Amino acid sequence: MTHLSRRSFLKRSAAGAITAAAPLVLSSGVLATSGNPGANDRIVLGGIGMGVMGGNLMRGFSRFDDVRLAAVADVDLRKAEAAAEESGADAYQDYRHVLDRQDIDAVFIATPHHWHALQTIQAAQSGKDIYCEKCLSHTVREGRLMAEAVAKHDRVLQTGTQQRSGEQEYKGCMLIRNERLGKLEKVIAHHYLSPWLNGLPGETIPPELDWDMWCGPVEPHPYNPLLTAGAEGVTYGAWYSMRAFGGGEMTCFGPHGLDIVQWALGVDGPEEIWTEGEPFEAVTYRPDTLPDEPCTQCHTSLQGLEPKVFMRYPGDITVEFAEDINTGARFIGEEGSITISRGHLSSDPEDLAEEPLEDPEVELYRSEDHHRNWLDCIKDRSQPVADVETGHRTATVCHLGNIARWVSEVTGETGNRLQWDTEAEEFTNSDWGNHFLDRPRRAPYQLPTI
Image (tube, rainbow, N blue to C red):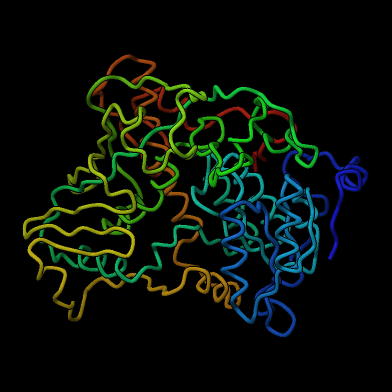
């Protein structure tokens, strides 16, 4: 296997500064064409981002006999080399070397959210199929460009919202879509936190870490090991919680629960978003305000929950972000309620969820293994259960929740209903809402306009 020292990496990449949206060489996907997923029916994978989730994906895909992991990359060379040691793959610090390899059919991307769009678009341009962790995008505009790139280059993308392949989640959504609850009236979702501002102090950058590239499109912040899970005893990086790099719990666990909401409703997004309560007030994340674990997920007692978010979906169905159901929701209808969360399905009365459906009018996509589903779709060039459009629409509803709070912060008001045009992907009555649909990116990490 190849292990690149920092000196070797700098020498190799000195002339390879990132261009607007192209990897080092734009290969045409020689081994990933229709009907030819790889020699001997084997799919050769590359991994980009080898933290906790990247390691989980590496091990998850390695359990299949028809998969070979050829290369891994991480801006922290220690993580890349550790993953390479475990898997027998080649290690790189610059992910573009993975995209440049013509022997690699597909890549999984498990980097922080602010990197997902550029890496996904470049992977599509390089002829690679893509498994991208949730939240698929960092902004609504990014997600649309990602979907366009995947479609243009005829790639297969699976979003890492694995509950789409869960048995209980599938069954629950089937019951709701086939009107087991009668007319659906209301949905209670989790009260996801919005992101904080970064107030962590700067520390010495490890020599194995390319911090400037870690920040990428974001103007560099002071390095702190809590951001990257580089501190002892820290599992998840605090970047999840930071507005510059992630979207808080709204985009951390929100893509799981809100994806199930939209799957059960059979729609692509809400018509209105509004907030109630006190206007949002940004929280600064400092050592004296740290939660027990630097990722905000599941810390429902922390600041960032107010104001409460509401959405109105077609059919006059209200989704209220109100309870502790962080991977699902409770659906209330004329006949009772059904609660879906990760690996869990229950109802009130109990027999609502227990009686099997007979001859259902609506049939949902059935996947029993999220990883296997993507691999099979690579081979037959079909769409996976959480394809790029699904992932984009799910990410969008998460972003809308954050945007509603941010609008309340700048206006000082709550209760104003933001009208959302799902087709045009813009607000029809809020300039501030549209302002937050995208964000600036520093050169040379801009996204393509086409």
